[in-house]
Image 1 (cartoon, rainbow over the protein chains, first blue to last red):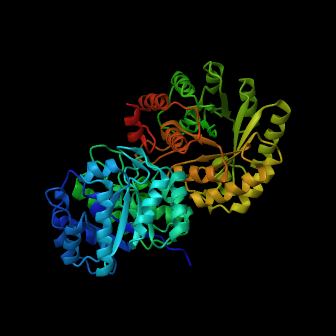
Image 2: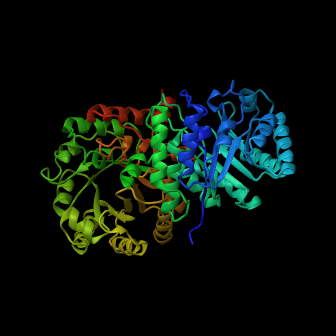
Image 3: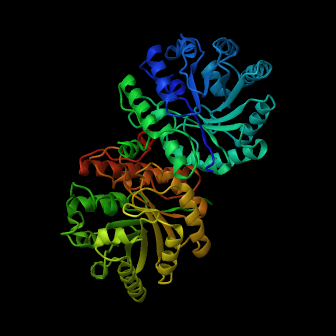
Length: 298
Length: 298
């Protein structure tokens, strides 16, 4: 039987959160419904963040109240304990928390020190353990930071150990700015898989430098079997054609299935969701292999 | 000291040969000059093929007579013994010959049986050994054939053994239609490197399915250090935006250099050559990471 690769679809959160075009809650519900139809096993629906800070994510509680009747793991990003409580109140049982690996990224992004960010993350992790809520803890800018440059592998491994001692359901190593190369990915993920096994690890890649699929392959070689991906590669800036965002779900599915892994996703349904997304955003969407995949499914 | 990766630039041959827009000999000379300026160590200038069959390559002898005064290895494709003799007469001392791995591809492409193609290839290899001419022998459609589908690895390894017994300067495993996945690449190239060492092996990837860089990484892991690449990713059909051709030289350079390999190419000069190519073709050119690379070099 084919080995399974688990894809977590993040277009409705990481994809939408930076778009200049703000979708309505109804549009976001339609997107979540279309993505749920693809067969993806995990789906991030939005974030419980201040609507003043991120208006694109306002109304995530409404989306949580109207989830499609599909048996899959819905999740949401929570920026802090308040967000955690809102998500719990909305009956979301899997939350993502993000902690940047560098001092400067934390200071610039959330005006907190690295240490304060980790303490907050640990409080949420401990609370979630008591509440029986699963947490995906993201280590952001784990390879390169836009402020500090290259991030030492040893530092990330130490931070991973620290977070793992608070028992997240998953630790996700995130190349937030799409700067990782596959050799660095394979080296780091091999060390983490050796320490923790593959079941509690994931990777989150951006495709800014077109190395997204090479990085997925490198992580697969290291034993990683859980990947974030965004339908259509949404997450880049729509004003810079070709500046890709998250690694596209359809690219990851194609890569994995071509090597014999099973993802459970339907490519035609995935491309339909990408088309819906393009209509809503008002600009073409699609991963690196869009032309070829579209022909295959025509 | 950084380990070296040798790139053979094929835009002026594989890139141009299928373009509906035919460049003049003068334009092709300007392109060869611009590519030679990038610091690339190997450069394919065209092919000695019938101008009736491939008008895009007419006048390659003129280009050979007017090579830029840059110290690098210029080469040309020769389809048969007549082409070999024309290339020798033009003082080209490194020739590429291409042999498709499947019966149907040979029949459809050059109206010859697989066996006849290999016999012809062996005759050229033996003659070149006597003449002191270096041959790069390409095994085309080495992973998947558009007519026969998946190509068994064992078949390609047998064909590789057969060709290697005639001592080509390099055996190049070519994913002609861009269908290979990195697991297949790593498996096959590891076996070939184990048998023959890396110095006489190369890979030629197309990026049709966006797995080009993942395949380069897989081949690097297997020990391969010689890669064909095409400036701007030229080689796809300009009427299908996003349908990429050869893996782009700039993408391969970025991947290799980001992992600490030394290619010797100047990225700004490479992007200048891509711009020149775009002007000549009359359509935007550029690899998968074009947006990001352009910003870096702006």
